[in-house]
Each structure stands twice: as C-alpha cells, then as structure tokens.
Amino acid sequence: RQLRSFVRACVRACVRAHVRVSPCRVRAQLCAQSAPWSSSPAASGAAERVSACVEVEAERRRLATQLAQFEEYKAEEVKRMQRERRVLERQAKAMLKVPDRKERSQLEALRNEVASLKAEAGAREGRHKMSIERLRRQLATLAEEKAELEREV
Image (cartoon, rainbow, N blue to C red; front, side):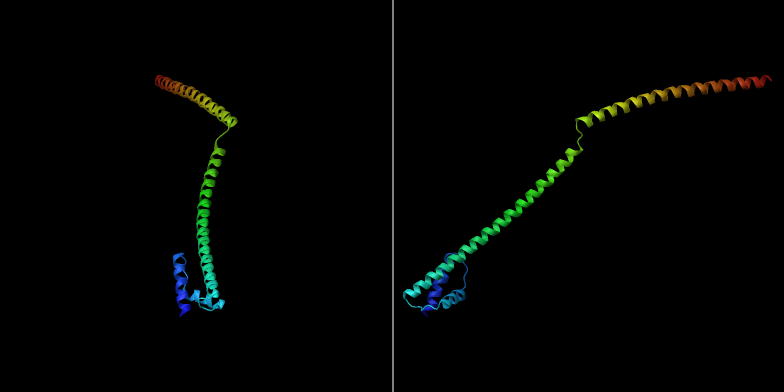
C-alpha cells in the first residue's frame, strides 16, 4: 500500500516535470533498489533516486529535442549551401562565356573585316550586274543587226 502511494506520488512528480513515465517503470526501478517502503530514511533515499531518474529522463528528452532541432537546422543549411553553390557555378560558367578585352578586340576586328568584305562583295555584284546588263543589250543589238543583215541577203 505504501509502495502504491509512493509510486503515484512519483508519477505525479514526473507529470509536473513534463516527463512521461509509466507507474510500472517507477515500480520496477524502486523494486530493483529493494528499499523498504516506509517513512524511513531509506524510503526518502529511494525517493531521491526516483527524482534523480526523473531529472535524468527530462534532461534526456531536452537533449533529444535539441538534437532534432540541430539536425533540422543542419539540413536547412545544407540545402542553402547547395543552392548558393549552384548559383555560384552558374555565375562562373557565365563569366567563362564572357569574352575578355583581347577577345573583344579580335571580335570587333573580325566584324569590321566581315563588313568590309560584304561591302566589297556588294560592289563586285553591282559591277557584274552592270556587265551582264551591258552584254545583254549588246547581244540584243547584235541579234537585231544579224536579223537585218539576213533580211538584206
């Protein structure tokens, strides 16, 4: 009977400390210590041991909660770092694609050369068109002269 009332008191203390402990567990711990359950000094020592167990259990739960929070924080930081790494890799690739001063001057020189070659090709094309037109007119004139000479003959 004294054991039962003592176990209830221990369970109430555990509930106040926000630690879940079953009465069976408290009873097993007390029985394992084999202390007499009276109002003797041994009973108060057992109560202190149970109280210490409750405190240890509360500390264990607190540490488990902190560990879970740390793991969550760690996962978030890993994700953030991976995102930053991807961004930096994209920026590095973009920087490799951007031409430096020497390459830009070479590109500008090549563009100027292409433009001058296009202009030159256009001028040649114009001269060729004029030559073709002149030769067509000459051909037409010669064809007319030939036709005239054939009529005369």
